[in-house]
Image 1 (cartoon, helix red, strand yellow):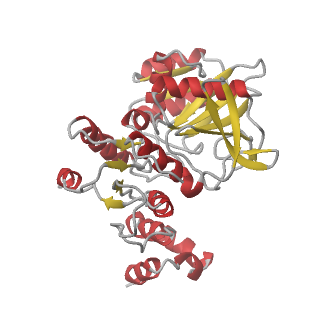
Image 2 (cartoon, one colour):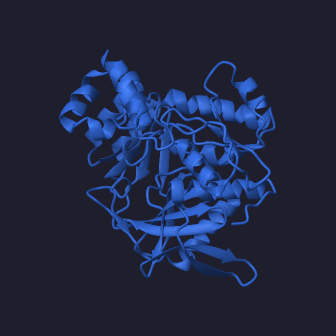
Image 3 (cartoon, helix red, strand yellow):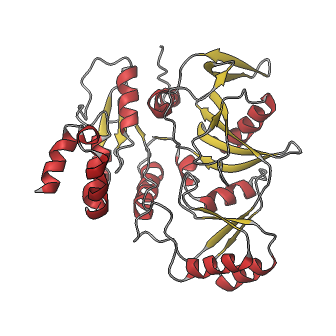
Length: 380
C-alpha cells in the first residue's frame, strides 16, 4: 500500500515537494533500496513523462538512440535532444532480448551514460556496450575507449602508465602479502582509493601503517563497501594506493567535442573531489595544452580531467571521467563571463567564446559532438 502510494506520487514528480524530511528520512531507512531509490530517481527526473520516441519536427536527418540508465541519468540526453530538435528513441538494454532491441531500433548511433552506482550495473554496461561496438558495429558516444577507463581507478592508472602521462605514483595489489609488505615501508600518509566510486566516496587517507594493514585485510577478506553504497556491493580481492601530495591545486578541465572549460576544485577538509567548492579562475593556457594533448592521445572528446598542479608547476592527472557531474549550465567563468575555449590549430592559440554551453549536464555538447561524428552537424 505505501509503495503503491509513493509510486503515484513519484509518477506525478511531486515526491520531493509533498513529503517533508521528517517523512522521507524514515522511508529511506526502512524501505528497501529497490523500492525507495527508483521512486526518488523517477521523482527527480524532469523528463519522466515525456515521449520515449520523439515526434517533434526534426532539425537533422538522423535518429539517436538514448540508452536508458537505472538512475535515469539518461534524461539529460532527452533534454538535450529536445532542445536541439534532434530525433531520439529511448532504449532499455538491461533485458535478455537487448540485442534485438538495439538491432531493431532504427537508430543511427547511440548516446550512453552507464550507471556507476553498483558494480553489477557497471559490468552489465561494460559487457553489452562492448558487444554493441565490436560485434554489432554500432556507434556510441562517449566512445567505448572513454567509458572503459570511466569509474575504474585501476584501468585509468594502467592507461596513464602505458601512455607515459604524468600522474601520482600508484600501486595496485592483488596479493595480500605483497600489499602488507608495501604498507610496512610505504611513505605515509598514503591514499586508498576504491576501484569504483566518485566524489571521494571511496577514498581514504591513511596516516599510519596499522590502519593501512587493517584496510588491506578488509579488502582481501570481508571486502569494502564505499560510503553511500549498497551493503551487498563489496569490492574485494585487490587494493589500490596512491601517493599523497601536499599543497597541490586541483583543476577540473573539461573537453566536450572541441569545447574546453576549466575551473578549480577547492579543497574542503582532506579532499578536493566532492567538496562542492569551486574557484572560477581562468585556466592557464599551458594547462589547456596539457589537457588537449592527453585527450588527443586517447581520442577522447567527452572527458573530465581532474589535474593536480604541484607547487613546482608540474601537472599530474588525478582522475579521468568521461561522464561527470555538471549541474550548472556553465563550467567556466572568465572575468565573470561564462564561456568556453576553442583551440585554433592554424594559429596555435586558444580563443575564448562567451556563452552558456553546458545545458542538460553538458549533454547538448555531447549530442552535437556525436552528430559531427556522423557527418550530420547541427547548424545552430
